[in-house]
Length: 193
Image (tube, rainbow, N blue to C red; front, side, top):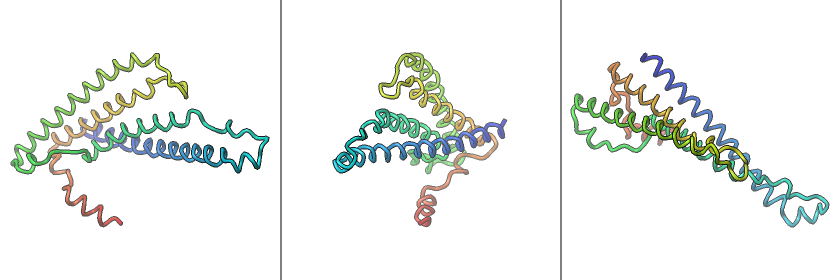
């Protein structure tokens, strides 16, 4: 069970990273095209040079909406990645002053609270998706369930990462042992460049 959950968590993390890269690339390309079509193709110089061509047909009316929806997915995929890598904001003062035995108890409590929250989001997120099945986006004409499902997908991914954390803790690899100290991360980041 341990290897299945940790492998699944690792594969979900890898998939999330590739999807974020793909979404960023599409958003970048659409943004560049939007700027080009508005400020170059719609410029006075182009209209005077080629008066017979109507360049307004090259504008993507749905481009801004697509970019907005891609960023929604990017944010929610990023939440799962940050949860997996323990990069999210944490209050660590209690963790630093506890003994090793109580740190393990604290880690179990934190992961239990996280698991309950993710289960809550999965349960009520799926109910909310039932209400959005009749909503259609104005410019792209797609079902808004596709956009709102990002919350549900993020919650499922985070729950899998949470179960992997539980599996690591039960195998004796305490989260406190596998975490990298914040100062070490800052030092490594400063040495990258």
